[in-house]
Image (cartoon, rainbow, N blue to C red; front, side):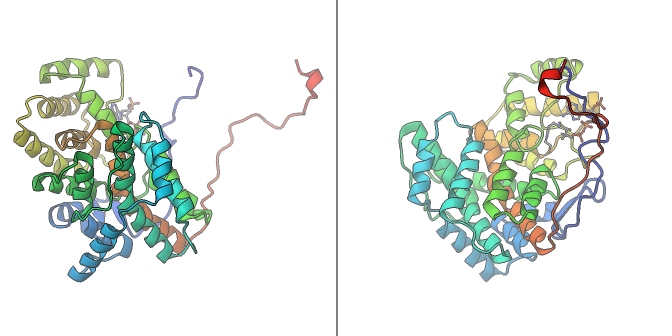
Length: 379
Ligand code: COA
């Protein structure tokens, strides 16, 4: 609306420390990211997603036997209860997949409600959602596309393989599973971002875990946050050649449009996750013989650096990587959920452990106190 107030540079809680956390650092050295004291570079290169999820939830890396048990637990929790399948079947085919996950989470919260609001109950509910989110999404996807009721209880070795297997109907190549796994590691946790803060606010009211996660999914859906990976793909898809992309982008910048997949509230020099996913995307492009999507992406990146001094965030090259893995664009942000449930669970636990209701104050900008006028006497 034209008369809505313009955002202020001091708004959005920018630069405000809204609490303490022992889970993650973002931009501590200007560009770095660490989970529980381990750099994102080490975790992406040397750990799998389940190992990282365990680290986030428990505060330490698992031993070999702990990891084996954890993987087994998650693999055994992939099945969906019948009433949840029925609810998913009722959702229209054109529902946004983020709304499918939001609804699926809510339904599971009714069928398997959290009992007790403890650390253990949050871990159990978080693990169940880690295992069940890919199943929910892909059960709905196949049912609404061609009426297939797929079996979601597979014996795939990890969540990345499970997701790609259910999506494509056959096991994915190892290089694809590894790229997907790295992407899940990169999306797992990011301190007090909008959706995690939402999860913490809801948790601070002593609401149940599923309510907090439903709120987190809602916050993540918007294009200024998780939705940026889908919006970045839509942008890349506008162009057939790098030159066309350059011309198109210059026009958008002249019109002062936001370019999705660029910029960050905290990082000022670079998003450390971006180089990692860019390298995955480059290799996937090479293997696929791609001559369009990756070169167009690189040119958009170069123009943004040259014209605005801006860098890609994680969402930008995640978009092309997912395209090469055969993932439909509307599933990009749901993948963020499938991963970030690990970080959200860690934050819900941390919030509960030292809970105080999150309730900030506001600077009032409205009218002075005035006299109430009866309805018949109002001009
Ligand atoms: N494209 C073009 N210009 C951008 C931009 C982008 N992606 N991101 C920021 N800018 C510009 C802003 O318009 C602003 O310009 P101005 O000073 O002339 O008004 C300036 O850079 C500072 O940006 P600001 O809006 O204050 O940053 P923020 O911290 O409030 O917002 C984001 C951070 C992430 C919301 C913002 O960079 C953005 O909208 N990016 C695109 C969406 C995205 O990729 N989100 C995923 C984040 S991981």
